[in-house]
Length: 144
Image (cartoon, rainbow, N blue to C red):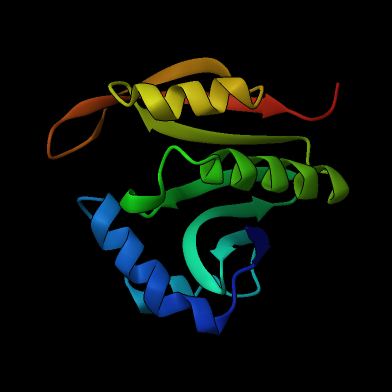
């Protein structure tokens, strides 16, 4: 598996992964709008996209928008590799922190982020819909 910057050739596959993972998936055109912005990275296996992470950047801040791994490729370290590469690139770009929200009930995601060094810094009440649920706000501070 390799992790590479998101490119046009990945968009159709990533849109399908989005549909398989999320209630309100990003479309191919929404993903296209992110090309060349922030840190959008794709995990490839045998030339095929199997997951991705998106992180929008504002000045020295990183905001993870999406982490998605194809359902048939989960529990193989792909999410961990994507987050690790994102954090590595965030450090190179001298970001002060990277932050995200995760569903309070999404124990695998919370464990993934905590394992990568993210800490719980707050709760956003009723952040998610379908079903309505709180979000756990998690942040990894990269500068002291």
